[in-house]
Image 1 (cartoon, rainbow, N blue to C red):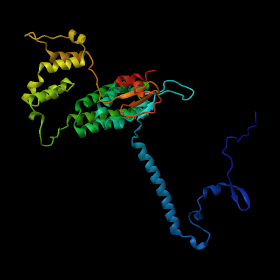
Image 2: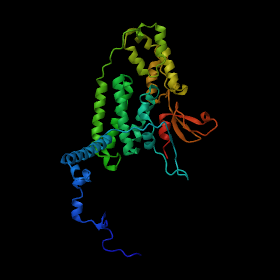
Image 3: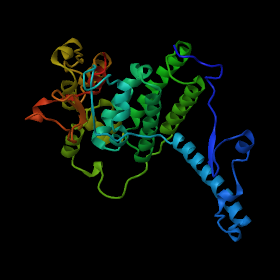
Image 4: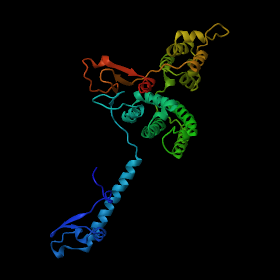
Length: 356
């Protein structure tokens, strides 16, 4: 074992090179390390100028201040990843060590741009709702912060577009209920961060809900409206709606749409779209005239069974290269037929993918 002196932990001595050779630096030299000559060329005596000295000092201090302010501002501005695909690995190999978690996938995938796409908006909202119900404690601190930043962008988009108000209101309600239960268990390290931060975030959620409740739908531009169309086209448009609550809201616009919204065939197709025949047979409701009450059956079935989910654009997983990507983006796959290796993932499948 080598011998260690009493001062073996000291930082050591500081030496400077002079014309006479190397010289040990003293404490006085350290205190006076900023020399006047260092701010200007002193090859000639007339080059020295006090004004140049003050300008150099002020420039150096302002540059440091701008750098510090820039670092502080960058720390406050949320950073969003814009990766179109990520590699999902569940175990360690010779080439790659570690595994991909739900928080890492949520951070790296481009969800901030996905909410701007109409085809992906409902998919992202449903994913945010599932995370709020059960997966929020499993996210890292960065992922939880990124979750709130994306949620803020979603709310701002709804306030600007005045569309999809009800799904976002339900999402905020679900998140607020989950946070109320999690904040009470803060001593058990359920959430990452100070409790005051989460109390402030809950206040923001309540403020967003109030803004959505007070939203005023702006009138559209003058032109042909839904009520100007023939009844057959109006009924055809109603058949494209997949939520019974939208039909009820549409029927409250005017009496003509209200009568169309009570069409039994319309509610029958809606029940058959979301639920199976076995589920429908268990919840049959017959009127006094012997007809099936499809509208009442729909809302009764909705309370008992989940709705069918269908999205225009979803995340896909390649079984050959284990890459998670959006449907309309390409990924570096080495398979001969990449389309046969891809599988569409629902929001619940996306979360289940990271259950190890």
